[in-house]
Image (tube, rainbow over all chains, first blue to last red; front, top):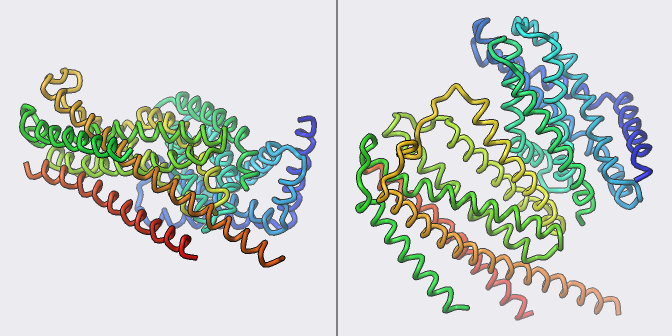
Length: 225
Length: 232
Length: 39
């Protein structure tokens, strides 16, 4: 356990460096999220008021799809160079790999959100009625909810057949409660119609529970045959 | 063992037949929904049975992770499949009930939506079992089962709290007003019948899975023996 | 009342389909065992 923190930091730094050099994940995520937003706006003919109501949902759907793209990529990179096998053989604690990957993915998606926010404001003429700092909280909690489970399931599906499809197949049903809460919180903050408090607490509990479950089960998944 | 099975099968058949009679004929006709309400006697017990199957899957998955016992894995797979069968029945009988009563097939009310998500979670579990390679399959599936079971709690809360746009129709037939004892009777008899049917089918599926496990093992042994012979 | 029949029949249809799937599974396993015993 004493190797835990150093391994975590080193792995995270490595992932960040790799990503910075190639910018694979960020580019594909960004473009994909943009496409989803644009396609939705073409599919639905919305008034300004309607836009404000559904913007919360749209944002998270777009992010969900974009996150799946990123998640598949970060694990595939490991697989390409047999890094995953090396990791299994090494005495490094599996949990630190999990958290490092999760944090890395978290940072990618948060950066994506930061880039997408101005676009959303423009496309949907958004002004938040509620305080913006709440949006930041919702964003952090919601993103972690997607990313922590996404990282775990990506690791699980990376060694199955049809792995690109397996990840969303596993992730989406499990994430439904978090998605409901995220959208409720975002919509509440944007429209100012009700308090996002319950949704944010719910998300926080969801985050804590699934981080713990993933943390304890990752070793099992990593060493599954 | 064979005769126990036959006796149990006959008992199940008897319970289900009696339940059918109760549901269609003996139970009194409900005041507001009239005869259509009788779907309740199949819809609700199927839901309860599905929940029990999924709970059994959760327990079996933990048992498997604890000791890697192939029997535990066989039970996990069997209960998941049978659970999905009953869950499918809930999702099919629900709309058939909804259409004549509320005029629409689907309502996104708390109960139906929760059941749909439950169904999605366990179908994804079955898909993982189909698409993962033989060695890792039971371990990965057990882990997913734990995630799924934990998630179920969140699903019910989330749908209750965050989906308030849609009406909360009274699907329990007599909720709040108390159930006529004859209706409760019909309900429980049908539930007993479906539980017995579930046990029967889970047993059949379990036996099949154990046979498959043993065949696979035999294949593996043959391959090893063949390789050993080849190198000598 | 036709709705009730539809629901009940649908329920049983689903059960029967699953039992048929199991039957096919058993047949396949039996074939596999025969293959193993023969070779």
